[in-house]
Image (cartoon, rainbow, N blue to C red):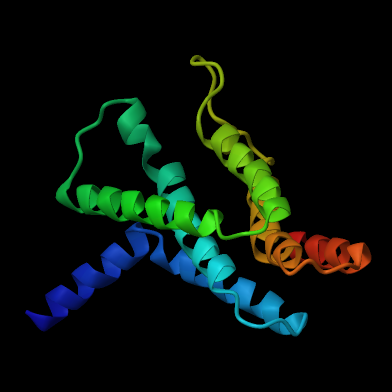
Length: 168
């Protein structure tokens, strides 16, 4: 019984993208440490919950676009994602204005990456070769650029070099 519950919990952890959100959170915290900045709850919370929302949107929006049936686990993931979207929106408004503007760029890329612009075409996610660059750009932006902008780090060279380093 315990083994079955553990496996079920682990599967939920993987399918709900919690592990991805934890990875993004730790990368944001590494950026804090690198620039000797204090813990920023708004940035950390935003990065975690926004990633959870974004990754689940990318993974599961096809179910809604194509009206596919939802399994019980998917319904729970949907509720978790809705909660995460609400929490990330609250944290979004605690960020500095320049950070909010930059986040809108990454949000736009996520939408363009996921949802087909022309109904007869595939989404950007299925374009060979471009997926890795869009994902790397968004990860580098959320884990490096957004925290640095929110800390108002003055050196644009530091921001650019760390962003490029994380991108590659």
